[in-house]
Length: 440
Image (cartoon, rainbow, N blue to C red; front, side, top):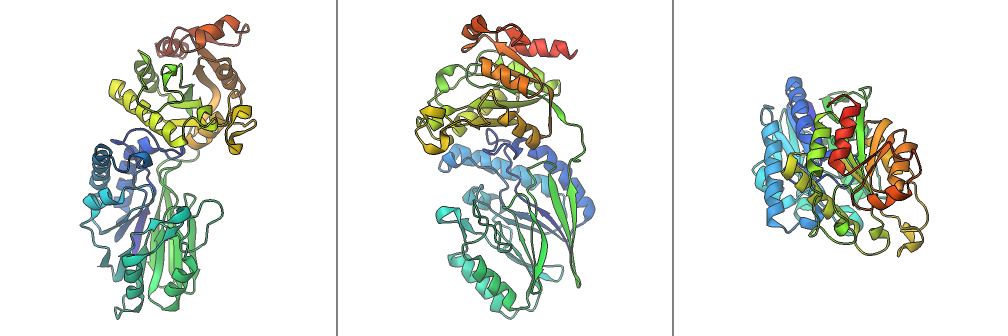
C-alpha cells in the first residue's frame, strides 16, 4: 500500500494575515500546495492523509461568522487543489483548525473505511487542559471498539497528535494518555501504521512491537515537505519530497518597521479598530514585491511586556494590517515578527531585561532569514527610528529612515552616514530602493 502524507499546512488565503509563528508560511501555501498536489498525483498513492492544521485559524475569532466563512473558503480551496488526486482521502482537524467549519467541508468523508486491503480509521481529537491532546468520549469508544472487533483487516490510524514517541517537554505534542493508547494498539496484531502531524519537525517511522509510528514534517515550513510511505510485509519505507530545495538561492529582503512606517502610531497599545495605513504604503510594498523582494515586518511591541495588551491583540492588529494591504494593493506579507520585551518597564518578569529580538539587535531579522530562506547581506531596513537603521546595518544591510512617525525628529538628531537614504515616506523609500537595483 502506498500512502501520501501531508500535514500542518497552516494555510491562510481568504483568512487575513499570517500565522502567529512566522516560519509557517501561511500565505504561500496555495501556491506550494498546487505544486505538491501534482507530485502526489504523479506518485499514484492508494491513500492521501491530511493529518490536521490545514488552516491557521485565528484563535481570537473562533465565534466570528465572517471569519468562519473565510475559513470555509480556504478549506474548499484545499479540497479543490487535491480533488485531482484519484484516491481516498483521510482528513482530521488539528488544534489550529476550526473543527466545525472543517466538518462542513470534509464531513462527508468516512472516518472508517477500507482501502487497498487495509482498514483506515481517522480520530478527531482535541486539546484539553494545558494544551494536552485527549482522546475522549466517542473517539475513545471508536478506538477501543476497533481494537477488539472481529474485522481481520490490518489497520492504519490517523490523528493529528502523537501517540509515539512521547514529546511533551515544553509544549505538549503527545496525548496525556499516550501510554494507555500505545499499550492498546500494541496489545493486538491489527494496527500496522499510526500517522500523525502536530510535531513540525516530524518523526521517522519507528516500529514498536510490530506497529510503525510516524509524524510527517510540517508542510508550511521551508522546504515544504510531504511524505510517501510504502507499506509492505517487511515494514514501512519512507520517501520524503519537498517543494523547494534547501540549496535554492536565498531571496533578497526588505524589512519594515510597523508603527510610524506602515501605519500611524495610533494602533500602539490598542486593538485593531484604529489601525489604518499611511497613504501610499500599500502601493510601495506592491512595487517592492513585484520586483521580487520578500517583505517582512519586524516590530517592537513592548506594549505586551508593559501590560497594555496581550499578544493575541497584537496578532489581531497584524491580521488587519495584512487585510488592508491585500485590499488596497494585493500585497502579501512574507512574515510579521514581533518582540514583546519591555526592559525595565515590563509588567511581567518574562519580558524584563534585554533581549536579542529588540532592535537595534538583529534577533528578529536573523530568525526571519532562517525561517524564510532570505539573504541578509545587502538587505534593506526601513523605519522611523535610529534603532531600525542600526538593526539593518548590523544584519549586513542598509537602513532607510522615513520622516513619517518619529522620523522627522530622528532625522534632526541623526549621525552622518547612519541612513543610506532619508525618505518622506514608505513610497519614496521604495522608489529609491528600486532605482538602486535598476528596477526603475
